[in-house]
Length: 406
Image (cartoon, rainbow, N blue to C red; front, side, top):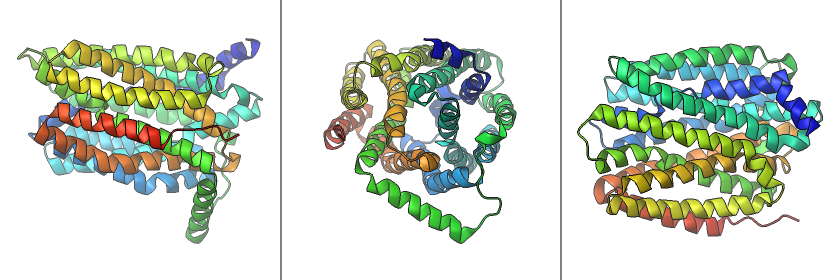
C-alpha cells in the first residue's frame, strides 16, 4: 500500500494520467456517426470511412513503432497530435465526402503514431523506479483518467450541441485539449524519449522492421495474446458507435436535439463506470488469472452482440443501452489485463513495436469487417448484422482461446 501511495503522488505518473485525460476530450465522439449521416451517406459508406482510417493506421503502425523505439518516443507522440489537429480542421470544413476521407487519413496517421508509444514510455518509467511489478495498477490508473476524460467530454458535449451553430464546430473545440497535450508531452523528461539514432537510414530502418517482426512471430504465446486482444478490440470498435443509429431508430421522438442530449448522457455514464473498472481491475488480476479474464470477456462480448440484436428486433431501447454499457465497461477493464499479460512476454527493446503490431492486427480486421457490418446493416438490418457478428465473436474466442504458456 505504501508503494501505491508513492505512485499516486509521483508527478510523472500524474502527467501520464493527464495525457490520457486530455487525449480523450473528443467532444464529437457521441455524435460522429450522426454527423456523418448528415452528409446523406449510407452506413456502408461510413464503414468505408472507418476502413480508410484503419488502412492508414495499418500501413504506418509498425513503422511508427520502429520510429518510436529508434528515433524518439516524445518526438513521435508530438507529431501524432499534429496529425490529429489537421484531421479535426478537415472534419470542421466537411462539406464533401472527399474532405471527410482526407480527415480520416490524418486521423489514421495520428492513431498509428500514438498507439503503443505512450504505454512503452510508462513501462520504461516504471522500470526506472522499480515499480514494474505494479504495471497493472499504474496502467489501470492512467487509463481511468483517460476514461474520465471521455466521460467529462460526453457531458460537456451536450452544452456544445445546445449552444453551437452546428455540430461541426465541436471539432474545432476539440483542438484545444490536443494542443495542451502536445506541450504536456514536450515537458516529459528527455530520458523517456529513448532516442537511439540521430540520422535516418532507410535500409537500416527496414532491417530493424524485419528483425522485430520475425522475433515477435517466433513467440507463439505472445502472438496469440496479441491476436486475442486485436480481434476483440476490432470487433468492439466496429460496433461500439452503432448505439447512435440504434437509438435514432428505436426512440420515439422527432427531436434531433433530444437524441443528441441522450447520447451525451449515455456516453458520459458509460465512461464513468469504465474508468472505475479500469482503475480497479488490478485487484481482480491478483485473484483471477489474466488468461481467464481475457477468455471470458471475449465470450461475453459475443453474447452481448447477440442480445443487442434481440433488443433491436423487439424494440427495447433501454435494454440495448444496458448491454452496450456492459460491453464498454468490459472492454476498458480488459485493456489493462492485456498490457499486464503481454508485457511479461515481450522484450524491453521491442515494446513499442510489439504494441504497434497488436494495433496493426486490429486495423487489418477493422478494414475487413467495418464495411461488412455497414453493408449488412443497410441490406439486411442492424439486428441481422449484430447476430452475424455475435456468432463470429464466439467462434473467434474458441479459436483464440488462451492457455497458460507454462
